[in-house]
Image (cartoon, rainbow, N blue to C red; front, top):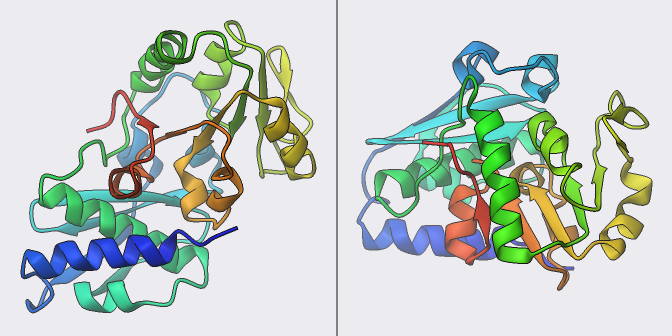
Amino acid sequence: MHSVYAPLRERLYAICEAERLLGEHVHIQARVLSTEEAIGNPEGDDFPLQKGRERLMEASFGQGRGQAFTDRFGDFSGRLDQILEMELQNNYRRAVFVATMNAVLHHLGQVGGTIHCRDSAPTECAAKLAEHLHNEYGRPRITQIGYQPKMVERLQDHFEYRIVDLDPENIGQAKGKVVVEGPETSAEAREWADLLLVTGTTLVNDTITDFLNGKEVLFYGTTVAGAAALMDWPRFCACSS
């Protein structure tokens, strides 16, 4: 097991130093978005954002914007160097760091897809994901980490498929033909799969290293945009901006 935060911090720091951003008196603002601001009016009412247990925190830096899903949220304002030196001991601080990283790399033109898709786009994204998985991986057995309703709806009809989630209101619930499993089956579900389809939120809740163990993995979502670029992790996020 290893921590990803140290190399992420080092690589981001080096980029900011090379771009001469550290010496400037820069303010980063992360704000909690309402459901309407974050995802508009998607088709369906089963997204974690709509249930109120997670929020998207959004950071602005220059011309860049970056987001991070988190279950511990609040506003933040500070200098870039302060955020890069921050101890990342809880989900709130990790969300500030991750959203900021996404905003800075977006501002520098080093990463795209840092803003969550809206309205009917999650349905379109799920269709594109199924096509991408077929084209890139064939017919793998897939364990998805993190509940995303449109992906679950689409993928279960095309693959041998399991899903693991942390939300107790989802665990044990049938979502179409699959039943959402809890963290107690995560290790076995990972071993069963040929491919892990992992939410970027794992970067904020400090479980991401559970999925960096040699098993083939594809991350999805906006939260992991900057980290995927810096660490050369495969990521799918077809409809983000």
